[in-house]
Image (cartoon, rainbow, N blue to C red; front, side):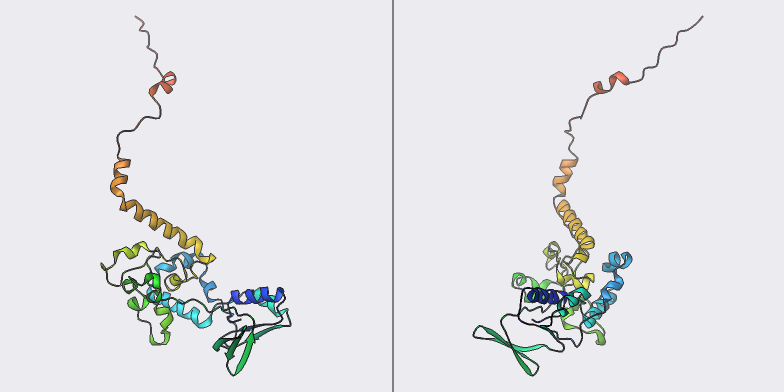
Length: 261
């Protein structure tokens, strides 16, 4: 098993609880990430206003997160260390892997391991130019490297390929006017991490980002058909809900005063 995020520990836990003879979890880092840097900005002010931060602040937060890594919850770790047949390997990236009969053979540092099954938790690869479904227009999509040049000590080629998204998670044009249709494509997935500072698509992002996307889609659809809506709401052919007979009997009538001579 390769990986070090919460999903990797949970997958290991399921395998162990299901009777696996042994489970080995390999992590690239020298220690399991334990500093929850994202949690520091989870209060409402930072949570709701984060997308309006300057590019330098958003980039630094994304870069900082990448340096320390994603933290698994302690109970996920406790779940697996309760088993004597669980083994954790640190500083152990796989150099190679291949099939040998019905077994998986992996080269890890200077050691060779054989497994029946492997679960790979390799993280997310974010680069629109490498996605076949975006191939026809990916060259028009603005990426972070097109909008922001990071300081030398914060360079990160992986983060630089994230799309530079608008306030409703929409793609933006690298060159304004070349691909106006990009604004109609909203990205609610991990590609929005640098722009919005959260694992987009995961639970923490829902209450802030889903309403923003829905509101923008509603706005765009409404104004795209404004001429139809204008005719509808300006229509003078409206039938009344009731006529004056409904309340005629209760209308106050001033009694005439009798003149005394």
